[in-house]
Length: 214
Image 1: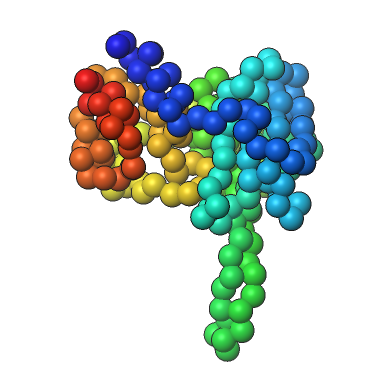
Image 2 (image 1 turned 60 degrees about the vertical axis):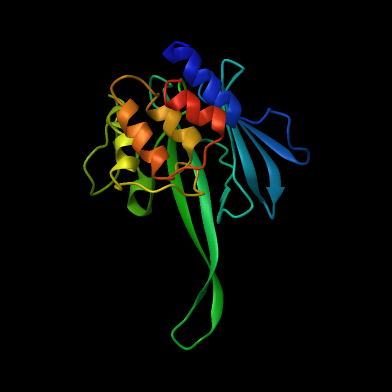
């Protein structure tokens, strides 16, 4: 099996069909050729988002029930000048306790950028970063922060194998996202073996065999 076939096989084993969830849904056009579909509505936010380019599905993300995040519908998501990146917003919610023992809900909004070719969510940040915009050369510029070149971002197998990153239920913390950001190949095969041997991600026997080069 060649590398391209391997990646498609692994992603297919992780993917869900576009129409897997019923219920309310919303569609947003981002630029001339990018469409976002939100579904799985929960209290005005959405469990799932699908990103399409030229009408073809690039990636569908279904957040698990244990995730603290839900996607926020954005009527006008930012897109890079070349259409390669689109902004996807989610909000983490959870109950926290004050020093006097009172408990209340706390929310933190996050902005993530998805590569509309590969489906890789290259970065996910919060705070001041999210108040930026794309400049003329396609970098993300936020007030008071240095511009970010998104082509230099994205998770790698080495990040997880070395402990610099950990899996999570957030949109950018899955094996699906890693495979899209850093497709398996000769240069990173050892890192994939290491993270599988360490049990960093849960993989099926077929995924393990494929990533091991079997």
